[in-house]
Image 1: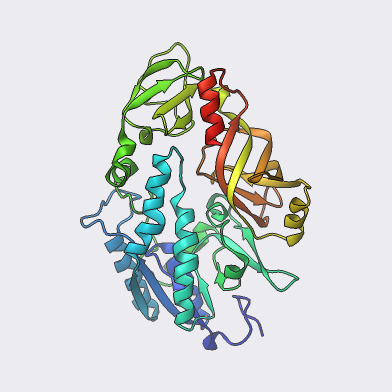
Image 2: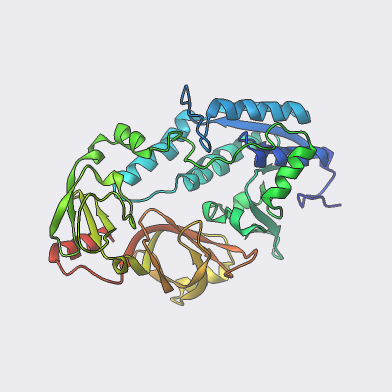
Length: 396
């Protein structure tokens, strides 16, 4: 017989490791699987230590989260382990985050954490603990495919869908991963937490980057990459100097406020030139992008799509370039040094370092086909200044 995790055999004979962050989602995941009879083991990762951590609403607090995860494990009667991954997390996530920002990118550290820590290191640990699968509280679905593998699908509740942060998951990893909350709404999850008497039922969702409880990510970058805080020039699309700035790490593509310059028309950050410490600004229309180049592309869709791309055929897909945007129609094709995406309707303010995720349909619980990191976004309005054009080309 098959059970709710789509596994052969009886639940009581199947060990499942649940990655417990101390939040309501992973806690409900553990409680559901325990109630269904699985041999559940809870694991919490100690990833960072802020000492007297911030208790602002929406901020992460490592000590409290570990305490909450332990309390839930005791409540539902499962063993619980805390593993020290601080050094590994710093190397794979925090250092990479700082280096990316210092180079003028806008990184997404949750993707690195899932890719390097949870779905690589923790998955190996779960196998060492004798688990058949590892479950998490992500809002995404994993389903069996006709070819015997598994596919990744968007969550039922669009506002909670976390597929943007999980595009780097491999097909091999999907064989061992399960996401029990993919077909639930957040309201249903909280109701289940109340039903099981979990102390975290009303716990606020974390809004900040977990290792930046103050919300001031520049503090970490200045500590790890002090050179990135160097002052520089604010220039327009033609290279004309409009003012000075305290460091490019204080700016992101698309930013309007806080530029510190007075002009007759609104200006937006169009590009960050880390090499020359320049913040390039321009009108809103200069943010419009239609073509983007990708690096570190991962495919988890049908092999036929990758074969067609390798043969020089472009493929129609739907892509997200921000986690909060709906997928939009695009063409995906092979380029000389990776892959490129042509956005049919264009998009505003795309920054290098962000993710571009591929889907098979624009809405509903469509399948995740893969994705990659944005290496360069080509603006529809180019600079007319030779040095700025050269800098934009070099960045690509």
